[in-house]
Amino acid sequence: MNRPEYLVIITGLSGSGKSYVQSSLEDLGFYCCDNLPIHLIEAFLEEVAAHENATRVGIVVDVRTHDFASVFPNFYRERIQKLIPNVVLIFLEATDEVLARRYSETRRPHPLANNLPIIEAIQTEREALTEVKSLANLVLDTSQFSVHELKAEVVRRFGLPSYTPSMLVTIISFGFKFSLPYNLDLLFDVRFLPNPHFVERLRPKTGLDPEVIEYLKQQREYEPFYAKLLDFVTYLLPGYQREMKSYLTIGIGCTGGKHRSVAIAQRLGADIESRGYSVEIVHRDFKR
Image (cartoon, rainbow, N blue to C red; front, side):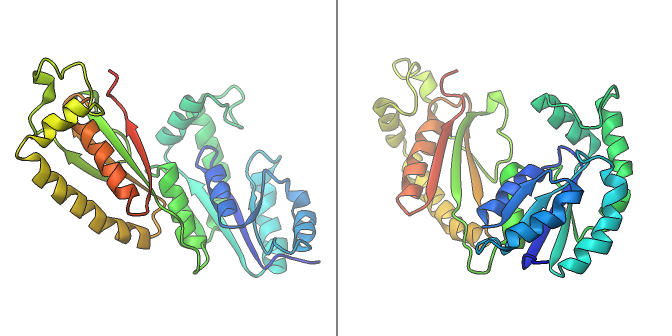
């Protein structure tokens, strides 16, 4: 049969991030298919091998296919590995608690749940896939991964040598009294600057207003601090990009997330963007 030059098979526990790995491979130019029944895999590979631009293929297979846990191991050993020498099997997993939380957040049913509590369904699937996991070339525990970090890991492992992903820099202004944002790579606390909140005419305004920006510029600490901040961040950015990081998240925090952090985040975003980076600015708390 015709066959692709390179095949990545993605499997693992439900809720562990298989769809994110698939979409990341698609971004790298892989021809992908999700939830392919085992008995159709060979026909699918023969079909896509005829496509000029489908030399690298990704397939997601898991317990949504009937009898997957019992049928797939032997099929993989006896058919796939013999047909396609360049095959990689990725197994994704996460802790029971993380998987349960993900299902709670999405409100989607676990494929093995039926009438089982979610934790029991997860444990049942984990035990059933023990042999499948033992065949994997790569096992990834995604418990601590954000979707951005998972994509970066896929790019690092499966991107072509000439592939250079663009990096999106997200700058989040926030108030410490409302908790830290999740998954920050860099965090800067600007609460040492005088707080416009205590200036009555500035209290209802935000760091986007010219009056607040001018007030901050009048503080003797502000410009020296900002110059050092910009120099530090712009020094780091090329290093993160060399490490193929697709997303970098910077947190700028003040007490309420309305004045100081907003003004600095907005200015930092504009300066980083002027240096050729893609930038997203999020003011999480400034309307509270």
